[in-house]
Length: 202
Image 1 (cartoon, helix red, strand yellow):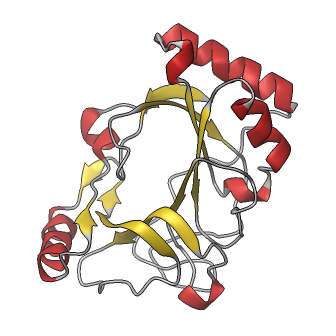
Image 2 (cartoon, rainbow, N blue to C red):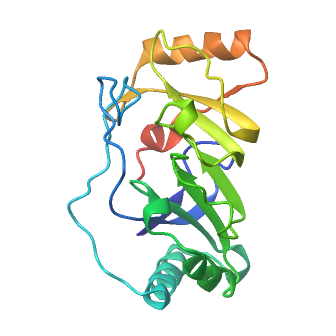
């Protein structure tokens, strides 16, 4: 759990507490497979974790936001992972919302989170389109490496974004150039770069 700026998507540059939930139902790697779209390695560390109640999570998130300088009228949380839908439930979302928080999720779309009462849903599919279960979202964001084509989303979203792969913390120039071309040829999409890596923030 940490306080930082959102580094990608249509909410890039906004201050949020990130609540990273442990575990994932996929295993993304350079090689495509049943649990990986291929083209990039997962950069999430799954070893550490802490069991917490909803009350403890809200309390800790509030403390981190206040330490970072957030005001009561601008509290925003992003549930991420791994795959946060494996653990996130309506009671935790409600606990945040009852304290005035704006609630968002970054999910791989393999589970339906539409009933959780979230304010913003970002789906970044890492599975074949027929396996996507979240069918509506505020944004869909696809990671693309050099040579990968434009997606055909199952999930309907207000905003459609392409995000070039990185090599760890280093931008892959070929992937960026490729994604620029994809957007130029498909102007209903937009480019989303992992700005937090360029800003060198968490």
